[in-house]
Length: 378
Image (cartoon, rainbow, N blue to C red; front, side, top):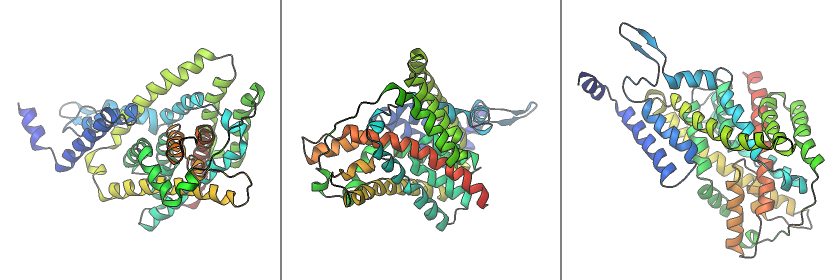
Protein backbone atom coordinates (compact mmCIF):
# COMPACT_ATOMS: atom_id res chain seq x y z
CA UNK A 1 0.00 0.00 0.00
CA UNK A 2 2.87 2.37 0.79
CA UNK A 3 4.25 1.84 -2.74
CA UNK A 4 0.83 2.74 -4.15
CA UNK A 5 0.59 5.90 -2.07
CA UNK A 6 4.18 6.90 -2.88
CA UNK A 7 3.51 6.35 -6.57
CA UNK A 8 0.34 8.43 -6.58
CA UNK A 9 1.95 11.20 -4.56
CA UNK A 10 4.97 11.33 -6.88
CA UNK A 11 2.99 11.41 -10.13
CA UNK A 12 3.53 14.75 -11.85
CA UNK A 13 1.23 16.48 -14.30
CA UNK A 14 3.84 15.87 -17.00
CA UNK A 15 3.59 12.12 -16.39
CA UNK A 16 -0.19 12.34 -16.66
CA UNK A 17 0.29 14.07 -20.01
CA UNK A 18 2.52 11.20 -21.12
CA UNK A 19 -0.10 8.67 -20.05
CA UNK A 20 -2.51 10.54 -22.30
CA UNK A 21 0.03 10.57 -25.14
CA UNK A 22 0.50 6.81 -24.73
CA UNK A 23 -3.26 6.26 -24.74
CA UNK A 24 -3.65 8.34 -27.92
CA UNK A 25 -0.94 6.35 -29.71
CA UNK A 26 -2.54 3.07 -28.66
CA UNK A 27 -5.95 4.34 -29.81
CA UNK A 28 -4.58 5.34 -33.22
CA UNK A 29 -2.89 1.95 -33.56
CA UNK A 30 -5.92 -0.16 -32.64
CA UNK A 31 -8.99 1.85 -33.63
CA UNK A 32 -7.58 3.68 -36.65
CA UNK A 33 -5.06 0.97 -37.65
CA UNK A 34 -2.38 3.63 -38.20
CA UNK A 35 1.08 1.97 -38.15
CA UNK A 36 -0.02 -0.40 -35.32
CA UNK A 37 3.31 -2.28 -35.22
CA UNK A 38 5.00 0.99 -34.22
CA UNK A 39 2.45 3.19 -32.51
CA UNK A 40 1.17 0.43 -30.21
CA UNK A 41 4.58 -0.40 -28.64
CA UNK A 42 5.51 3.29 -28.54
CA UNK A 43 2.26 4.15 -26.78
CA UNK A 44 2.54 1.33 -24.26
CA UNK A 45 6.21 2.14 -23.70
CA UNK A 46 5.35 5.78 -23.00
CA UNK A 47 3.15 4.56 -20.16
CA UNK A 48 5.78 2.11 -18.86
CA UNK A 49 8.59 4.66 -18.53
CA UNK A 50 6.44 7.29 -16.82
CA UNK A 51 5.06 5.20 -13.98
CA UNK A 52 6.77 6.55 -10.81
CA UNK A 53 9.70 4.32 -9.75
CA UNK A 54 9.18 2.22 -12.89
CA UNK A 55 11.41 -0.84 -13.08
CA UNK A 56 11.38 -0.55 -16.88
CA UNK A 57 13.95 2.25 -16.69
CA UNK A 58 17.15 2.58 -14.65
CA UNK A 59 16.51 3.33 -10.98
CA UNK A 60 18.61 3.65 -7.84
CA UNK A 61 17.20 1.31 -5.20
CA UNK A 62 17.92 1.59 -1.50
CA UNK A 63 20.37 -1.07 -0.33
CA UNK A 64 20.97 -2.30 -3.89
CA UNK A 65 22.26 0.65 -5.89
CA UNK A 66 21.61 1.34 -9.55
CA UNK A 67 19.44 -1.22 -11.33
CA UNK A 68 19.33 -1.03 -15.12
CA UNK A 69 15.81 -1.09 -16.55
CA UNK A 70 15.05 -3.25 -19.58
CA UNK A 71 14.06 -0.33 -21.83
CA UNK A 72 17.20 1.63 -20.99
CA UNK A 73 19.25 -1.51 -21.66
CA UNK A 74 17.54 -2.09 -25.00
CA UNK A 75 18.11 1.54 -25.94
CA UNK A 76 21.79 1.40 -25.00
CA UNK A 77 22.45 -1.89 -26.80
CA UNK A 78 20.06 -1.58 -29.72
CA UNK A 79 20.25 2.12 -30.58
CA UNK A 80 22.84 4.09 -28.65
CA UNK A 81 25.83 1.75 -28.94
CA UNK A 82 25.76 1.00 -32.68
CA UNK A 83 22.34 2.11 -33.98
CA UNK A 84 21.74 -1.62 -34.61
CA UNK A 85 17.95 -1.73 -34.58
CA UNK A 86 17.28 1.00 -37.18
CA UNK A 87 19.99 -0.42 -39.44
CA UNK A 88 18.79 -4.03 -39.16
CA UNK A 89 15.30 -2.85 -40.01
CA UNK A 90 16.65 -1.58 -43.34
CA UNK A 91 17.46 -5.16 -44.34
CA UNK A 92 13.79 -6.07 -43.96
CA UNK A 93 12.62 -2.94 -45.75
CA UNK A 94 14.99 -3.60 -48.64
CA UNK A 95 13.70 -7.16 -48.94
CA UNK A 96 10.13 -5.82 -49.22
CA UNK A 97 10.82 -3.38 -52.05
CA UNK A 98 10.41 -4.20 -55.71
CA UNK A 99 12.49 -1.68 -57.66
CA UNK A 100 11.03 -2.96 -60.94
CA UNK A 101 8.72 0.04 -61.55
CA UNK A 102 11.67 2.40 -60.99
CA UNK A 103 14.02 0.42 -63.23
CA UNK A 104 11.30 0.37 -65.88
CA UNK A 105 11.10 4.18 -65.79
CA UNK A 106 14.43 5.49 -64.39
CA UNK A 107 13.49 9.18 -64.63
CA UNK A 108 11.26 8.62 -61.58
CA UNK A 109 14.44 8.72 -59.49
CA UNK A 110 14.31 12.50 -59.95
CA UNK A 111 11.13 12.67 -57.87
CA UNK A 112 12.82 10.71 -55.08
CA UNK A 113 15.48 13.41 -55.02
CA UNK A 114 13.16 16.43 -55.36
CA UNK A 115 10.90 15.33 -52.52
CA UNK A 116 13.79 15.50 -50.04
CA UNK A 117 13.79 19.31 -50.27
CA UNK A 118 11.54 19.43 -47.23
CA UNK A 119 14.37 18.06 -45.08
CA UNK A 120 16.66 20.99 -45.78
CA UNK A 121 13.86 23.58 -45.68
CA UNK A 122 12.86 22.29 -42.24
CA UNK A 123 16.45 22.39 -41.00
CA UNK A 124 16.49 26.08 -41.91
CA UNK A 125 13.18 26.70 -40.13
CA UNK A 126 14.33 24.83 -37.01
CA UNK A 127 17.57 26.84 -36.89
CA UNK A 128 15.62 30.08 -37.21
CA UNK A 129 13.46 28.99 -34.27
CA UNK A 130 16.54 28.71 -32.08
CA UNK A 131 17.52 25.04 -32.27
CA UNK A 132 21.26 24.43 -32.57
CA UNK A 133 22.55 22.90 -35.81
CA UNK A 134 22.69 19.35 -34.45
CA UNK A 135 19.10 19.44 -33.23
CA UNK A 136 17.88 21.35 -36.31
CA UNK A 137 19.41 18.72 -38.63
CA UNK A 138 17.89 15.93 -36.55
CA UNK A 139 14.48 17.59 -36.70
CA UNK A 140 14.78 18.19 -40.42
CA UNK A 141 15.33 14.51 -41.12
CA UNK A 142 11.71 13.91 -40.06
CA UNK A 143 11.07 15.07 -43.61
CA UNK A 144 12.68 11.86 -44.85
CA UNK A 145 9.31 10.25 -44.02
CA UNK A 146 11.40 7.34 -42.82
CA UNK A 147 11.28 6.48 -39.12
CA UNK A 148 14.49 4.40 -38.91
CA UNK A 149 16.47 7.11 -40.72
CA UNK A 150 15.10 9.76 -38.35
CA UNK A 151 16.08 7.72 -35.30
CA UNK A 152 19.50 6.88 -36.67
CA UNK A 153 20.45 10.41 -37.70
CA UNK A 154 19.22 12.04 -34.48
CA UNK A 155 21.02 9.42 -32.38
CA UNK A 156 24.32 9.63 -34.29
CA UNK A 157 24.28 13.43 -34.12
CA UNK A 158 23.60 13.26 -30.39
CA UNK A 159 20.34 15.21 -30.42
CA UNK A 160 18.55 15.40 -27.09
CA UNK A 161 15.20 15.18 -28.88
CA UNK A 162 15.34 11.58 -30.17
CA UNK A 163 11.99 10.72 -28.55
CA UNK A 164 9.93 13.61 -29.95
CA UNK A 165 11.60 13.19 -33.36
CA UNK A 166 10.72 9.48 -33.48
CA UNK A 167 7.13 10.13 -32.39
CA UNK A 168 6.74 12.88 -34.99
CA UNK A 169 8.27 10.79 -37.79
CA UNK A 170 6.15 7.71 -37.18
CA UNK A 171 2.97 9.62 -36.37
CA UNK A 172 3.11 11.63 -39.58
CA UNK A 173 4.02 8.52 -41.59
CA UNK A 174 0.80 7.01 -40.29
CA UNK A 175 -1.08 10.21 -41.21
CA UNK A 176 0.20 10.36 -44.81
CA UNK A 177 -3.34 9.58 -46.15
CA UNK A 178 -4.50 12.81 -44.47
CA UNK A 179 -1.45 15.07 -44.89
CA UNK A 180 -0.63 14.42 -48.53
CA UNK A 181 -4.08 15.09 -50.07
CA UNK A 182 -4.17 18.42 -48.24
CA UNK A 183 -0.68 19.40 -49.45
CA UNK A 184 -1.26 18.22 -53.02
CA UNK A 185 -4.55 20.09 -53.40
CA UNK A 186 -2.82 23.29 -52.28
CA UNK A 187 -0.69 23.33 -55.45
CA UNK A 188 -2.70 21.43 -58.09
CA UNK A 189 -5.97 21.78 -59.96
CA UNK A 190 -8.47 18.98 -60.57
CA UNK A 191 -7.48 19.08 -64.24
CA UNK A 192 -3.84 18.45 -63.32
CA UNK A 193 -4.80 15.65 -60.95
CA UNK A 194 -6.76 14.01 -63.77
CA UNK A 195 -3.76 13.78 -66.15
CA UNK A 196 -3.48 10.20 -67.37
CA UNK A 197 -0.17 8.42 -67.70
CA UNK A 198 -0.16 5.24 -69.78
CA UNK A 199 1.80 2.44 -68.18
CA UNK A 200 3.92 0.56 -70.71
CA UNK A 201 6.59 -1.06 -68.56
CA UNK A 202 9.86 -2.12 -70.05
CA UNK A 203 10.97 -5.62 -69.21
CA UNK A 204 13.52 -5.61 -66.41
CA UNK A 205 15.83 -8.61 -66.47
CA UNK A 206 17.20 -10.49 -63.49
CA UNK A 207 20.72 -9.21 -64.14
CA UNK A 208 19.57 -5.58 -63.93
CA UNK A 209 17.68 -6.30 -60.70
CA UNK A 210 20.78 -7.88 -59.15
CA UNK A 211 23.18 -5.19 -60.33
CA UNK A 212 20.91 -2.31 -59.22
CA UNK A 213 21.43 -2.63 -55.43
CA UNK A 214 25.18 -3.14 -55.92
CA UNK A 215 25.55 -0.10 -58.18
CA UNK A 216 23.38 2.11 -55.94
CA UNK A 217 25.51 1.17 -52.93
CA UNK A 218 28.73 2.00 -54.77
CA UNK A 219 27.45 5.32 -56.13
CA UNK A 220 25.97 6.39 -52.80
CA UNK A 221 29.15 5.31 -51.03
CA UNK A 222 31.30 7.57 -53.16
CA UNK A 223 28.85 10.50 -53.20
CA UNK A 224 27.95 10.34 -49.50
CA UNK A 225 30.21 7.89 -47.62
CA UNK A 226 28.29 8.44 -44.38
CA UNK A 227 25.24 6.90 -46.06
CA UNK A 228 26.88 3.51 -46.62
CA UNK A 229 25.42 1.87 -43.52
CA UNK A 230 21.95 3.16 -44.42
CA UNK A 231 21.99 2.55 -48.16
CA UNK A 232 24.13 -0.57 -47.89
CA UNK A 233 21.80 -2.53 -45.61
CA UNK A 234 18.73 -1.36 -47.54
CA UNK A 235 20.30 -2.59 -50.76
CA UNK A 236 21.58 -5.77 -49.12
CA UNK A 237 18.01 -6.62 -48.19
CA UNK A 238 16.95 -5.97 -51.78
CA UNK A 239 19.79 -8.14 -53.09
CA UNK A 240 18.56 -11.00 -50.88
CA UNK A 241 15.15 -10.57 -52.53
CA UNK A 242 16.39 -10.39 -56.11
CA UNK A 243 19.23 -12.92 -56.15
CA UNK A 244 16.79 -15.83 -56.50
CA UNK A 245 18.72 -18.28 -54.31
CA UNK A 246 17.71 -17.04 -50.84
CA UNK A 247 13.94 -17.26 -51.03
CA UNK A 248 13.39 -18.42 -47.45
CA UNK A 249 15.79 -15.80 -46.07
CA UNK A 250 14.07 -13.10 -48.13
CA UNK A 251 10.70 -14.08 -46.64
CA UNK A 252 12.24 -14.14 -43.16
CA UNK A 253 13.72 -10.66 -43.64
CA UNK A 254 10.41 -9.28 -44.94
CA UNK A 255 8.28 -10.76 -42.17
CA UNK A 256 9.98 -12.15 -39.07
CA UNK A 257 13.00 -9.82 -38.98
CA UNK A 258 11.14 -6.65 -39.99
CA UNK A 259 8.22 -7.28 -37.61
CA UNK A 260 10.40 -8.23 -34.64
CA UNK A 261 12.77 -5.28 -35.03
CA UNK A 262 9.82 -2.91 -35.58
CA UNK A 263 8.16 -4.01 -32.33
CA UNK A 264 11.40 -3.79 -30.34
CA UNK A 265 12.32 -0.45 -31.90
CA UNK A 266 8.93 1.02 -31.03
CA UNK A 267 9.02 0.09 -27.36
CA UNK A 268 12.75 0.87 -27.05
CA UNK A 269 12.25 4.43 -28.31
CA UNK A 270 9.89 4.87 -25.38
CA UNK A 271 13.01 5.02 -23.16
CA UNK A 272 13.46 8.56 -24.52
CA UNK A 273 9.86 9.54 -23.78
CA UNK A 274 10.27 10.33 -20.10
CA UNK A 275 7.95 13.15 -19.04
CA UNK A 276 10.60 15.55 -17.78
CA UNK A 277 12.31 15.71 -21.19
CA UNK A 278 9.32 15.07 -23.45
CA UNK A 279 6.66 17.44 -22.14
CA UNK A 280 8.25 20.71 -23.24
CA UNK A 281 7.60 23.60 -25.58
CA UNK A 282 10.36 22.21 -27.79
CA UNK A 283 8.39 19.00 -28.31
CA UNK A 284 5.40 20.99 -29.56
CA UNK A 285 7.70 22.89 -31.90
CA UNK A 286 9.21 19.63 -33.18
CA UNK A 287 5.76 18.19 -33.89
CA UNK A 288 4.85 21.34 -35.83
CA UNK A 289 8.13 21.30 -37.75
CA UNK A 290 7.67 17.61 -38.56
CA UNK A 291 4.29 18.31 -40.08
CA UNK A 292 5.81 21.19 -42.03
CA UNK A 293 8.54 18.86 -43.32
CA UNK A 294 5.99 16.38 -44.71
CA UNK A 295 4.05 19.19 -46.38
CA UNK A 296 7.24 20.71 -47.83
CA UNK A 297 8.35 17.32 -49.18
CA UNK A 298 5.06 16.68 -50.92
CA UNK A 299 4.78 20.16 -52.41
CA UNK A 300 8.40 20.07 -53.61
CA UNK A 301 7.80 16.79 -55.44
CA UNK A 302 4.60 18.08 -57.04
CA UNK A 303 6.15 21.39 -58.13
CA UNK A 304 9.16 19.57 -59.60
CA UNK A 305 6.82 17.41 -61.69
CA UNK A 306 5.05 20.56 -62.90
CA UNK A 307 8.41 22.05 -63.81
CA UNK A 308 9.29 18.97 -65.86
CA UNK A 309 5.98 19.26 -67.68
CA UNK A 310 7.05 22.65 -69.05
CA UNK A 311 9.76 20.87 -71.06
CA UNK A 312 8.18 17.49 -71.67
CA UNK A 313 5.88 16.32 -74.44
CA UNK A 314 4.48 13.45 -72.39
CA UNK A 315 2.96 15.10 -69.35
CA UNK A 316 3.49 13.71 -65.87
CA UNK A 317 0.62 13.80 -63.42
CA UNK A 318 2.07 16.22 -60.81
CA UNK A 319 0.79 14.05 -57.98
CA UNK A 320 3.33 11.37 -58.92
CA UNK A 321 6.03 13.81 -57.79
CA UNK A 322 4.40 13.89 -54.37
CA UNK A 323 4.94 10.13 -54.09
CA UNK A 324 8.69 10.77 -54.00
CA UNK A 325 8.68 10.65 -50.20
CA UNK A 326 9.85 7.52 -48.40
CA UNK A 327 6.51 6.47 -46.87
CA UNK A 328 6.20 3.26 -48.89
CA UNK A 329 3.67 2.12 -50.06
CA UNK A 330 1.19 4.46 -48.37
CA UNK A 331 2.07 7.48 -50.48
CA UNK A 332 1.68 5.56 -53.75
CA UNK A 333 -1.76 4.37 -52.66
CA UNK A 334 -2.77 7.93 -51.78
CA UNK A 335 -1.79 9.11 -55.28
CA UNK A 336 -3.72 6.26 -56.92
CA UNK A 337 -6.84 7.10 -54.88
CA UNK A 338 -6.61 10.83 -55.64
CA UNK A 339 -6.09 10.12 -59.34
CA UNK A 340 -9.27 8.07 -59.46
CA UNK A 341 -11.16 10.73 -57.55
CA UNK A 342 -10.25 13.18 -60.32
CA UNK A 343 -10.98 10.64 -63.09
CA UNK A 344 -12.25 7.10 -62.36
CA UNK A 345 -10.30 5.85 -65.39
CA UNK A 346 -7.00 7.21 -64.10
CA UNK A 347 -4.48 4.57 -62.98
CA UNK A 348 -1.32 6.02 -61.48
CA UNK A 349 -0.32 3.30 -59.01
CA UNK A 350 2.72 1.86 -60.79
CA UNK A 351 4.12 5.31 -61.63
CA UNK A 352 3.59 6.37 -58.02
CA UNK A 353 5.24 3.20 -56.72
CA UNK A 354 8.28 3.92 -58.88
CA UNK A 355 8.56 7.41 -57.39
CA UNK A 356 7.87 6.02 -53.92
CA UNK A 357 10.72 3.49 -53.99
CA UNK A 358 12.96 6.23 -55.40
CA UNK A 359 12.04 8.16 -52.25
CA UNK A 360 13.36 5.28 -50.14
CA UNK A 361 16.75 5.66 -51.80
CA UNK A 362 16.60 9.47 -51.66
CA UNK A 363 15.78 9.57 -47.96
CA UNK A 364 18.65 7.34 -46.84
CA UNK A 365 21.12 9.21 -49.05
CA UNK A 366 19.84 12.52 -47.63
CA UNK A 367 20.36 11.11 -44.13
CA UNK A 368 23.90 10.16 -45.05
CA UNK A 369 24.57 13.60 -46.51
CA UNK A 370 23.44 15.22 -43.26
CA UNK A 371 25.62 12.84 -41.21
CA UNK A 372 28.56 13.77 -43.42
CA UNK A 373 28.01 17.53 -43.45
CA UNK A 374 26.81 18.53 -39.98
CA UNK A 375 29.78 17.33 -37.88
CA UNK A 376 32.12 19.28 -40.16
CA UNK A 377 30.12 22.46 -39.60
CA UNK A 378 30.16 22.30 -35.82
